[in-house]
Figure: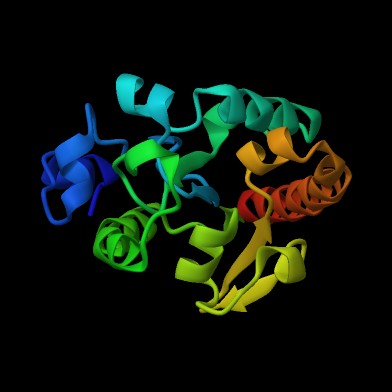
Length: 188
């Protein structure tokens, strides 16, 4: 199914209570055929206003990290585990993530990424392992059904804890190397 069709089908989603507080649903953006998919927690205030993922301060940091790793943002796809802003930017609840995973699964099927980067603990728990602790699993590759996944710190965490930037940069170098390898294999 085309990503545009998936997004049209879910643009008015009301399956969980998060829809009541949103201005706009934030389904994601970027290259719908990218081998690299980034998944964050949920939209913040700026994202809710604009209907785009990662456009606030955390998004600006993510953009700088992508640029430093020589990964053009427009060549990847970025989304969140939940598509509506949780009140007060709180961490999404398990039932909210479970509800939104339906949309995320359809996005996965459409995009067919070969690499997934989970930004923060919520998407890491929802996608990789419900018991995962980001501080223990960040920077490690996991593989499922031929898709490689790497959890790393959420940029918002790095804004609050700048000491984590060094570890995150090591993760982004791993992501860059894997991305270049996948792109090279796709060309051959």
